[in-house]
Image (cartoon, rainbow, N blue to C red):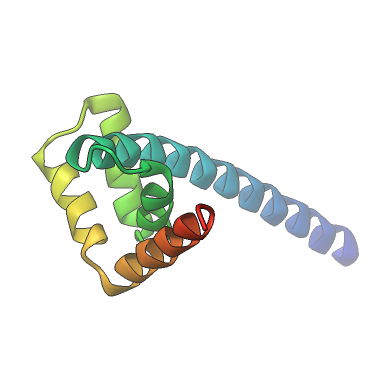
Amino acid sequence: MRAALISLSLVALASCNVAQEAADVIARDQARGVVNGIVAERFPGINAAPVTDCVIDNASAQEILSVAQAAVLGVNDQTVNTVTSILQRPDTIRCIAQNALISLEDFA
């Protein structure tokens, strides 16, 4: 009986993890679309995708959720400020610089 209860608990926990991971992926995808639009608008002429990836990778879970909401509610000043704040972080800047160098190597 005890083993069955433990097994059932592990299955329930795994289900929660799968649901949480799915929610995280959905939120990140929604946020990625919003960030990509902001980057493309603010920095025309650059490839927004690598910059967007750096922003998403350096955002907190709360920031991801906040930005993802803009996919439904629309982009506002708070959304732009959040993305701008993430863009100014040293790790984000480093990520963007590394991706830019990789992109430049493609032309060499």
